[in-house]
Amino acid sequence: MTTRELLVMSFLYLAATVVVAYFTRATARRVAGALVGAAAVGVLMLKVVALCEALGWWRVPFASTPYFVPLFFLGLSISCTPIYLVTWRVARRYGWRGLAVSVGIVAVIGPPRDYAYATAFPKWMVFAPGVAPILADSAAYVAIVIVGHAVMRLVSGPAWEDRLSRPPGLVWQT
Image (cartoon, rainbow, N blue to C red; front, side, top):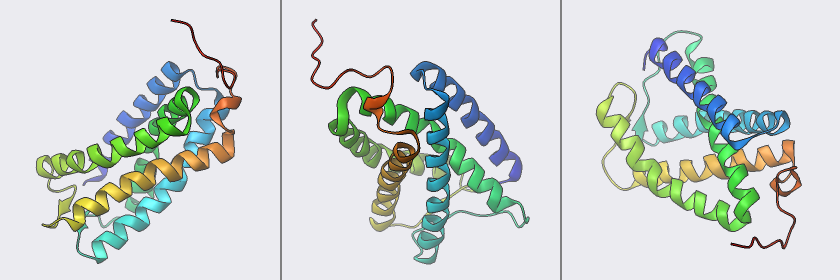
């Protein structure tokens, strides 16, 4: 992955973050929490990438410039931020069951998405053959959602405390 490609992807995810923040009606406190959660996940994912490369499960080519790793971290963080704004809305509406379903969805959808990217852009990522890389990728997606959402909740508070949330036990009439 080149520096230019990383910058373009980061900018597109930043635009997506702005759009998601608008449509989820996230407060500044919630956006800040999502950014902090995404930064925590950025650090975690740098470690996961390094571990999985050491185990031979996948390879993410890094440019040999001194600023590429911080830029990669920034790209990881920006790309995860919209996820936490969406999981906040899911948690606000459906509680922990909704979050559990969200985790299950990303665990199933994440690996095929990454394999599609790796097929289309082999300079970005290469997976080793076998089941282990698929399971590791799925586990990484689970960690992305759980860790990032938990950190966002620590910073911004639980979803049910937001001004737009429903009071506990309220049933909507249809």
